[in-house]
Image (tube, rainbow, N blue to C red; front, side, top):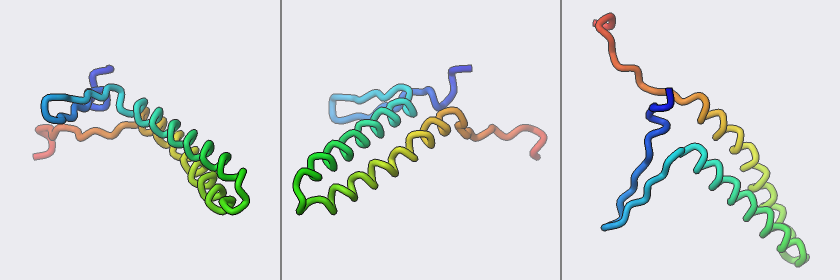
Length: 91
């Protein structure tokens, strides 16, 4: 059953423009991957400068933490909680 609330597009309006996000969990996972790449690239560049090594280490720690976020997003996409409409049995 692919027509769940998790698959419904998210639409954001900006004046006369609108941004439509489909497959939200996949989009979130891709955005997370971009951030991981940015943290590790910036950390790698900063390691070239001895005075910036402390900042570089923190960027690697942030990127490593985001590697934990990746499976969390994937798991959430497979286990999506929905509100079940009340039935006549709950009177």
